[in-house]
Length: 248
Figure 1 (tube, helix red, strand yellow):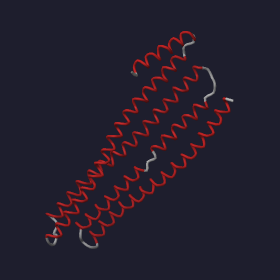
Figure 2 (tube, one colour; figure 1 turned 90 degrees about the horizontal axis):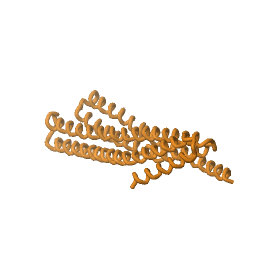
Figure 3 (tube, helix red, strand yellow; figure 1 turned 180 degrees about the vertical axis):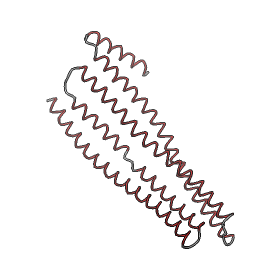
Figure 4 (cartoon, helix red, strand yellow; figure 1 turned 180 degrees about the horizontal axis):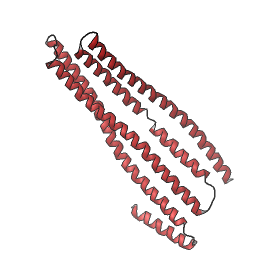
C-alpha cells in the first residue's frame, strides 16, 4: 500500500516536472527573442551612425540617434533578464530533489543518510550557481544603465557647446532630449541596483537557512555511522536538544 502511494506521488511529480519544463522552454524562447531584438538594435545604431556620418555628413545627429537606439536596446536587455525563469527553475529543482528522495531504496540507515547528505550538497551547488548568475546579470545591467545616463549627458553638452547647431531652439531641443535620455537610463539603473540589493538581502537570508539544513543533514550522516543503537538514540536526542536551543 505504501509503495503504491510512493509510486503515484512519483508519477504526479514527473507530470509536474514535464509541465514546468515546457514553461521553461517558453520563457527561454521569449528571452532569446528580446536578446535578438536588442542585438539587432545595437547593429541598427551602428548603421545609423555610419549613415549619418558618411551619407548626410551629420556626425552629431548620428551619435545622438545611435545613443537613443542603444537606450532602447538596454531596455530590451532588461526585459530579457526579466524573462529569466528563476521561479520555474527553483520549482523544477525542488521536484527533481523530491523525485530523487522517493527513488532512494530502503537500504541501511547509514547509506540513506549519506545519500541525503550528498543530495543536499548538490542542492547547495545548484542554488549557488543559479543565484550568482542571476544577481550578476542584474548588477551588470544596472552599471551599464548608469554609464548610458552619463553618456547621454556628455553627448548633450557636446552638441550644445561644441557642435555647429543652427539657432537657440535646436540647442534647447538637444538639451531636453539629452536630459530625458539621461533621466530614463538612470531611472532604469536605479531600479536594477535596487533589485540587486534586495536580491542580495534575500539570498543571504535564504543561504543561512540552507546552511542550517546542511548542518542537519551532516549531523544525521554522522549519527548514522554509530553502530550502537542505544548510543545512536542518545546522540540524536542531544542533537535535537541543541537544535531547539539554538533556534530559540
